[in-house]
Length: 290
Length: 348
Image (tube, rainbow over all chains, first blue to last red; front, top):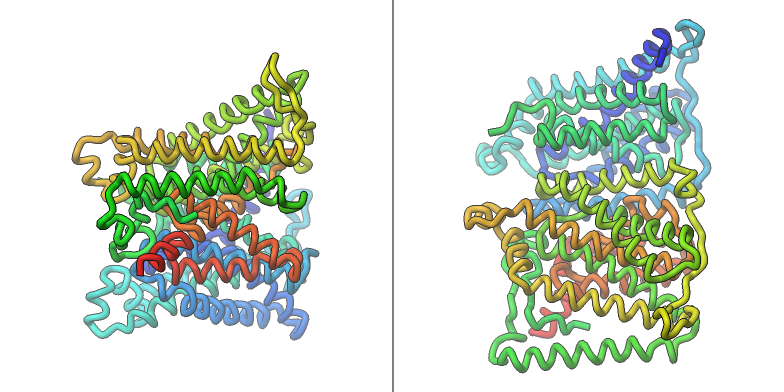
């Protein structure tokens, strides 16, 4: 089977672009899991609501970057509210109960969006419309910008965790919650902040993704599945692994969609997951377990 | 229906709440096991008798509704074998349910004349094959990893069914006619809503008795010991991987049976039933009713479907908003479910 070089290159760029958005979603998910032991089933819905807040803010202000900031802040507040009402009473119980509770949250949020915004897809305008010529295609600069912005946000998160005082508190809480508490770190606030940060990342990626495809109430379902695959393949709670896995899976799906329809290309990521589970059950990018 | 208290299977303390539950308090103490068995079986007969009489007195709509509760209850009960007894939360039961449905659909469409006794084994074989496949991979993982893996596996089958249009009808699904209820050479009657209800009731009751027997067998005891302490069970010398695979397959088999029944009741198979939200609803049934009780999930299914019926009168398709809120509140405040709550309340 002959595949022209230009198509392969285009799909590589496409794969990296969606991979970076996926990495942004998945790193929020893995951050929340790594630190709180909470599997956030509602993460896809936070992504979807972020996109809707973006639509509303864009209509109100006309500025994409304001919309991006507004969505991040709103979804962070929503995340904090979800944490306080739903997850805080469940801390210390089996992590499985958090799956159940956040599954309930996702049902509520998804149907709320359906009720509030209707089933018709909305559109977010691209902030800039420049294009460059890539072989026979006019490739929008915006797509490349998405990848850069996502990389910037993930990089900022990494720097924050590494050097920021609050970031150090977060890492201390991950390592030993009781000891961190004993050292005077306000653990409940740290946990709430982590959930809010993870939520904000989901909200931001929703706005970034908005211009690529429509915004509709069920878009979160698709993303939460892919984010789960990424998080398992990359290793639960492993930030760098998630980013690598997100790009790997998106690239493979992009290449696969050269041969089959995009709906079937998803199966490639399922296959990656199965192979990972067979040979490296703790994740591809984690040191080999004992 | 809170008569499942006879053996009072520990409603998964590790899962629902960290504190040990009041196991068998009240019901058990001071009563001989003969007496408890008597109470259990008389309660069981009363409930079954009521369910047999029900279609004679209920109007058409509620008759269908009751049948539907029984079918969803069977599905929830099958997943209780994993959630409540083995401590593995499966988010993939929609795959087993859906494959049972499509297996039955294939048998009804391919074979002339359509026969009930071909549809059931075909559905069961399809579901068991899928369950075996899922079990082989997913039982390598525990807890949330198991939950996520089963979820993703069910999505694989969803995508396959959704995109393989020539075979499965794609998005539109398959429609077929309902086979007659026939015992070859003796009797053949067309299903109406009454006979269908009795048929479903018979299948569900039988499945309940089988599952109950399974959970009380040595095999079921090993499953419960895996739930309580997997490492120690392994240390005692049980090959827990094999036990888990068999548990998932058994559970998938009964889920497939529920799928066959649902296909026969509704005369269609659709990819929507393979989507993971159905698995989520099954988990909700379990949590609402009380895990580790077998009857609890049926109660949960009834509660959920009644609430849905009630809410959808006012809110049409947005009924999941209040239902989701009720579910979250139950997870936080009543982790032992309606049945566990009723039992505790009776004990006071």
